[in-house]
Image 1: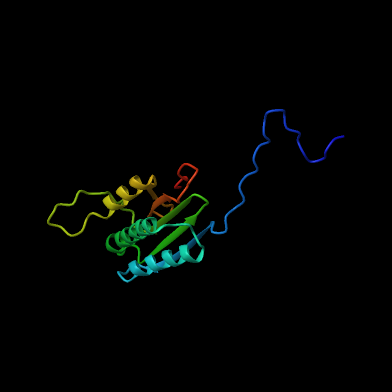
Image 2 (image 1 turned 45 degrees about the vertical axis):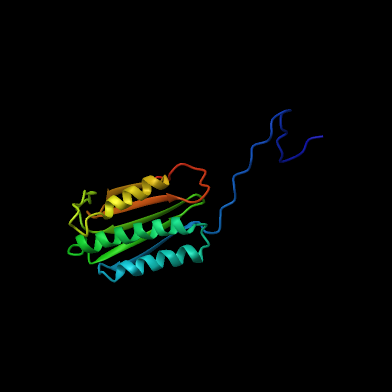
Length: 169
């Protein structure tokens, strides 16, 4: 007797596992903000509140790392791109295994992580972003946009991530 819709398994071999169902927190959210200093804490709050609302499984350390990245990327856009980009965009992408944040502005300058001298209080933002992404097994990238601006992205693995980093583009 043949069973319809079922492939019989060979002796000694388990049938292939079905793909895991999507998780409730997966999705992409994007918001814009003026290129003002006040947008930095607002962006942090928005990202923190989104992750809490979506019930993303982030521990305290991962949340702190992610919010530091958001702060640094938004601060860089506000400080260095506001003249040509009075508005910035922040995007959060959530998958089963990864959380990705991206900050986009309309300034063509591609940021570079500089070694800051000991006497300066600033200039270490991208060094922090790079260090955090490397330490957590994440990835960081900068890409020019079609409109001549740029988007800076960082992706961090969620606890128990089973896949390699997502493509940042």
